Length: 337
Image (cartoon, rainbow, N blue to C red; front, side, top):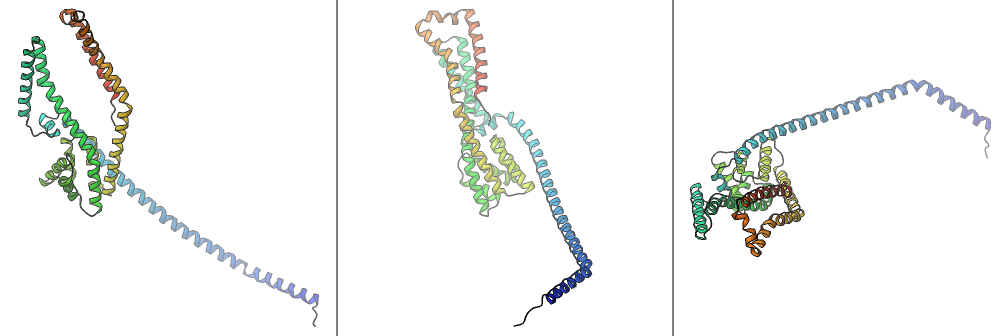
């Protein structure tokens, strides 16, 4: 067995420590220089990477800004054109209103039917023995007011059918475009296979393309025969896509969803305002109901309003106030969505 001398072990350890210290002292400057060099290289690389990222971010922001400016310019141009079209639509001729109602009549036919209807009412009221003023008033209302009211009713009913079917047609267009069909073929598909009145309106769009109009222009012309905000949205989407590009199928899909949400909101508003509408109808009909009941129970009492000149003045003033009240109530219960 060999024994270890503690003195020798201590000398060896001290010699190793001294050698290490000398080596570290000699290599310290080089180690620190290598560390600084590596740190500098890393900072340079990081700076270059940051510059690349900043440049990429700057280019992306510039591209988004250019795209946004292009869309804004397109929207301003479309808004200007739409204002001009709205002025034309506001002063729409009788021929345009007949087309909006989907009637195959000419203005001449409409005027002839109005005259005939007015004459029928004049003859009918004259045979019943009503006063001459009442006969002329009935003929005037039947000849001028009633046909235009019927025309407006038909236009409103056709527009409601169009709004009910438009989102489904847009969904068909979305599926057609995603399957690889171009926009023109998707429009022709709706014009051939869609439901009325969407089918007729899209057929006019296809016919407008055949005479040389572009797709955005043909879609904008739809506002002349179907003056609705939803049609304006559709034409704006088509126009922006043709000018600025983008995913048309996604845009049309979003538009279909928005139209359905507008329809739900309109139905909700109608349901919430139904009580107010019923109250307005009751309040508006109450004077006529009271007049009829008083006439049935005490005809001599109520006939003074129709035979005495002062009664005529009271009836005229009452009619004016009733008209003002009806207009106010109508504005209170009607909401634009």
